Structures are given as structure tokens and as C-alpha cells.
Image 1 (cartoon, rainbow, N blue to C red):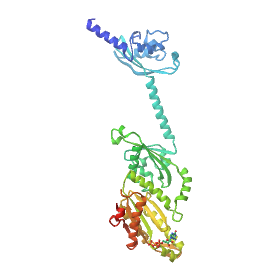
Image 2: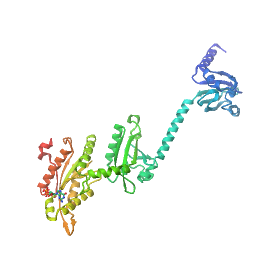
Image 3: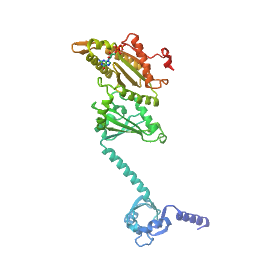
Image 4: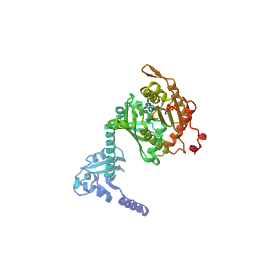
Length: 437
Ligand SMILES: Nc1nc2c(ncn2[C@@H]2O[C@H](COP(=O)(O)OP(=O)(O)OP(=O)(O)O)[C@@H](O)[C@H]2O)c(=O)[nH]1
């Protein structure tokens, strides 16, 4: 060998010696001609005779067919086996935990073999643990019967779900695919904008939890707890399209029922079934908080029956009560499920309309006035006709709280009464400079 070649050979030997993976070179019959220390360390405990002279003998207990594989290998050179995982039985050679070696065997030529051996126990264990966790999660997801697990795309549309979706919501997999999560709510109870607000809230705080009436495919209602959580941090995602959320819907009607009876007793107006004053202020406070987080148009309508004293005087108090019930039923039929309807007392009613402009509120209030004016209330053999007036105000940054908004709507209602009743008036800033600030 010439000097440079000899030097190169020396460098190669040194590399093989120091390499951080196990390397062993053998003859075709497995006789070891070179083995680096790491490989010796891995093979020695396997060797039946405590010697390390033949690779096939050393691996006999764990890979009895290795010699045959080499003999059967048809080509002059090539890969006999590639990253083959070789489990070493637990307890073998005093080991307490099972170990896994990775073996790559190369046929260099007719005479020589080269094996690369490494200990992959940790990565195999991690991989197994990962797969096991995945299997557990899948089992849980399939086995959970009172939760519907749904994944949502960045717009809140349904991408994936667990089989409980049908049991809880009554919707089949085909019916929910690609639809907005608002489909789980009754009618117009949640707007698409509110869906996006909830996703943004989940992004900001890590989750968004809401309880409320949900609707099954057959139209029946249940009290649902809906938790939305982002599947990744925003900055983990490279594109907007990859961002996704998980939604967990749980039917908590049972829990709700007991609380509901109590809540109804304290929050419902006994005559009309609408929210009472106290419940209105609680619900309105929540809407005001939402408005502070996501300022969107929000309006309020104050409604008052016209000349109601005359109805009482003419037809009696019971007839007056029937008129109030009729008025409340008309409100329920006219306004949306997401609006907050209440009787504040006497013949005075209020509606808070989230996601609604002044113009939108005015249109629906006018429709309501016309509905009432066009109907009569049958009490005994009497057909009582009556009208209502309404005042409207909308939320802006100058409105400090719900009382201030109600005061504006009240002033507009006063204007409607002064203007002849059976009409709708908006709050006018110029005519109320003190509140316009
Ligand atoms: N039947 C009945 N009457 C009520 C109830 N609560 C308040 N009232 C009556 O509602 C009437 C309200 O009269 P007013 O406040 O003078 O108003 P109005 O007659 O409607 O006149 P305008 O509002 O100016 O059109 C009073 O006579 C109250 O006694 C109730 O629960 N049932």
C-alpha cells in the first residue's frame, strides 16, 4: 500500500472506531474482522460464549435466520436488511427491560459484509407510547357517548366528528359536514359573526365556553355546554387554512333542569313568561360585556301599550292581563331567539337586540307595532283592539351602561307617545344634548 492510501485507510479505521454507531465488518460466513467499541458493547451481552468472533453466532438467539438471509441474498452486493428492528427478550443476559437494536446489513462483495447496529430502544418506546396515546384518545373519542367531539375549520365549519354527534344532536355525519357550528343552535340564536367572535375568543384566551339552548335535527331543544379550543397556537400554523378548532358539545339538560326550575321562579315574569326586570338586567349585562369585547351594532327597543289604563277601566283588570299576555306573545313571535325580551313592569316592555343596527331595530319594531295594531284580543265575547308605541336607541361609545341606553330608548318612547302613539321613534342626539355627549 502506498503511503497516502495507507494514511487514508488509517483515517477510515479511526472513523469506524470512533463512530457514534455500532459498525462491524465480517467475512461471508459471519467471522468478524473489525468491530468498533460501541458495536462490541451492544453485541457482547448477546454472545452465548462471551466471545465476539462471529456476528451470526452473536445474534443467533435473537436473529436465528440471519445467516440464511445472507446466503439467500441473490446479488453480488447490496442491502440484505435495512434498519431491521431486533427485539432483545427481556431478562436476556441480565437485562431487566427489553431492548431493541436496529440492524442494517450490507453485502459489500462476495467476501465481505458490513453491519450497522444501534440501540433504538428509546425511540421505539417513544414511538410506541405515542401510538398508544393516540389509540387511547381514539378509543375515548369513540367511546364518549355524552360528548360530541367536532373539529372546526378557521370559519367555524365542521370538518370532522366522533360518532356521538348523531346521538347527541340527531344530525348524521353527512348532514354536518362542511356546515357552520351555528347549525347546532335554534333558528337565529347565534349569528355567523358570533361564531367568529367565539373562535377569536378561543384564540385569545385558549378556550371559549358557552351554555345555552341547542337544537337537535328533529327541532327539539336541549341545554348544551359548548367548549371551543384552538388545536394549535396561532403562530404554530404556517397558514390561516391550517388553523383549526375543536368543539365539544355536551347535553347538560339534566343538570340544567333543576337549575332551570329555580331560575324560572326568579327570572320569569309570572304573567307573560318573558324575562322579568331582574333577569333582563343580568342578561343585558352579559351582552354589554360582549359588546365591550366585540363592539358590534346593538340596539334596544322600549315598548309600551298605549292608553292601557283605559283598557283596564273599560274591560276590567283580567282583560288587561290578557292584553299584556297577547303583547308578550307578539314580541316572542316577532323578535329573534338571540334577542333579550323582558317585561319591566306594568305595561312596559323592553327588547335588547345584539348584532342589530338602529335601522334594523326600527324595521322590526315597526313590524311589531303593525302586527299589534292589526289584531284583536278575544276576551269572553269582547274583541279588544289596542296599539303599542316604541322607542329605539343604539349602542355607541358614549353610552356608559345599560341604564344609559335604556334612558335614550325611554326618551324616544316618550317622543312616540307625544307624537300620537302607535308609532316608533328613534332617539335623536340633537334633541337631547345632555345625553348626546
Ligand atoms: N291589567 C293590568 N294592568 C296593569 C298591570 N300593571 C300595571 N297596570 C296598569 O297599567 C296602567 C298604566 O297606565 P299609564 O301608566 O297611565 O299609561 P297608559 O294608560 O298606558 O297611557 P300611555 O302609556 O301614556 O299610553 C295603570 O292603570 C296600571 O294600573 C298588570 O299587571 N295588569
